[in-house]
Length: 422
Image 1 (cartoon, rainbow, N blue to C red):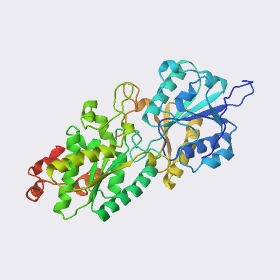
Image 2 (cartoon, rainbow, N blue to C red):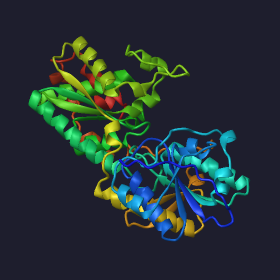
Image 3 (cartoon, rainbow, N blue to C red):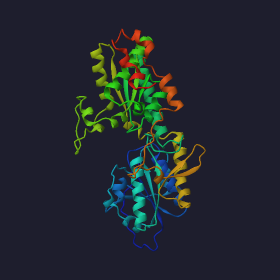
Image 4 (cartoon, helix red, strand yellow):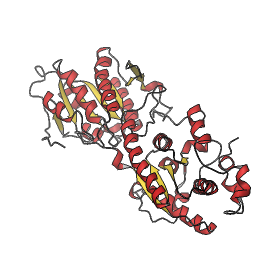
C-alpha cells in the first residue's frame, strides 16, 4: 500500500480555482474500491477537473479540517488493481445537524461521489436532500459497494466486490471441505452477511456444501439457535446414513440480525458490550459460537462427531479484485462521469450485464425513513430451490427409520419441518 501525505485544501482564490469533484468511501472495504476511485478520477482529470479524495468517509467530509488527497494520473495507475482503499474508510453516520456546506463551496465541488453499501447510500440520499434545500448546486452519485451483495440493484446485477470476495471464499471453503474429507471431521463455517445470505449461499453452493443456512430460509418460521444447530445435525445424520463421516456447513452471520440480545446471551458465550449494552458480535467469531453450540448438542445426543470452526470474514474484504470486478468497477467509475454529464443526481450508478450504464435513483429504493432497503436472497427462485432441495443433505420422512439409530426423534431434525416448508 502506498502512503500519501494528506493535506487540508483551502482555496486562495475561489474565482480562479478549477472546478472539482470529491470522492469518499464509507463502511467496510470491498475488492474494487481503488479501481472505482482510479476510474472516476481518470475520466474527470482528463476533462480538467481537480479530483479530491476524502479520508474517514462522512466523518472527514464534515470535519473542520478534512484530510484530503488530490489525485493525478500517476496515483490512479498505482492503485488501479490494488485491494483495499487508498482512502481511509469510516462507518460514521452523521446526524443532520453535522451537515455543512463549506467544503463544497470552498473547493468548488460540483460532484460528490460516495462509495459504499446501504448505510452509505442512505446517508448520501440525506446529503443530497440537504444540499438541495440549501440551494447548493452539487450533484451526488453513489457507487454501490458491498461484499454482502445486498443493495437493491436490478436483477442479475451484483454489487461490486461481491464476486471477488466470493471467489476467495470459495478457495478457502474448498480447502476446508478437503480437510473435512481428509481428517474425517466436520467444519462449521461462518460467512459475512449483515442481513442477507448472498455470500454464504454463493460460497456454499459453489463448493457443494451439504448444509447452507441463511436468514432468508426462515421465511415460514422464526430463526433460532436451536433450529440452526438442528439443521446442521440433520445434515450430519443424513451423511452418516449415506456412509459419509465428514462434511461442512456454512452459516451466514446474518442470522444474528434476527435474534434478540437475550437469545444471543443465552449461548453462555463471553461477550464484551458496547455503550448501549449490546453484545459486540464483531469481537467474537460467529463460527466459534455455532460450533460450541453444535458440540454441546452432539454431546447431549451422544453422537460422536468432531467439529471445528472457520470464520470467513475480514480476510475477504481487501483481496485483489478478480477480472470481473476490475472491468465492472471500471465501467461503474466511467459511468459516474456519464451520469454526471447527463445531469443525474441522488442516484446510484449501475451497469447491467450488457455494460449499459443506468441510474438507480435512491428515492425509488428507500423506505419511509429514507433508508435504502436491502436486497435479500430470493428463497423462492429456481436457483434457490435447486440448491436447497436437491444439493443439500438433510433427513426427511423416508430417512426416519434409519435416523433412529442416532436420534430418538428424527422429525425434529427434518429440514422441511424445521423451516415449515411444504
